[in-house]
Image (tube, rainbow, N blue to C red; front, side, top):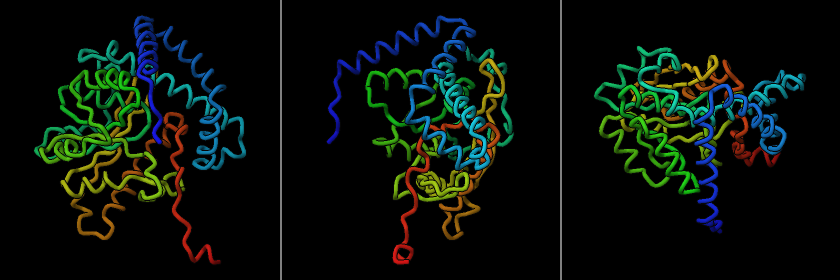
Length: 310
């Protein structure tokens, strides 16, 4: 049974968040980053459940850390630090990132691979993950005049959902709900537009299992199927932070053309494996900027009956 939400409680949480946003946007960057350090320290010590998830994920992804507990702990602390800073920077983007100063905040790596596709008369899929500052990519593209659409999960709190959606759409990006707007999503590709999605979320027991950091990870097959159905090239992108304050790279890691796989057996699997490998290469360069707090490997392939019998 779904939990009944309290509109009053949702609105109170919204008011607290809005007050925090107003305060944060009024602070100098140095003070905001100092505050982020404090919040990261608190989150690390209070949030034991996700801290243990991060420890477990990192030990599997980087087996050498099992013998280096201090280094593992430092990595987990850096993960918390990055994502608290990320939350602060998302709030600060409307104040700090403009069409006149974007070169001071963003460096585009591999622009020759993506810019022609952004203006081509053909649909385009931009695939990324919970790495670096994924929100900045769509925000910056809108800032530069490119009309894009992004698939996102709808927040349970309707007041916060409206506020975050307005922030995300400030420069012209359109946010589509992951659930409930399937016709709009397919319509974007049918009309040769640009669609961005996060492709590193656990897809449950019925997902497609592909290797990710040496372990099978349940992955949504819909991304590859859309590329094949609509003949949409897929650009694998990461947005790592490279220096302070708030300077990121938008890195084009790979470009996948569905026609290269259309007549191959298990074409969707091959495309999914390829973009997942691209995301892994990006993450390995800046491992502290990946969302290890998420149970990415929550589901595993079912054990075959023959193994059970043995």
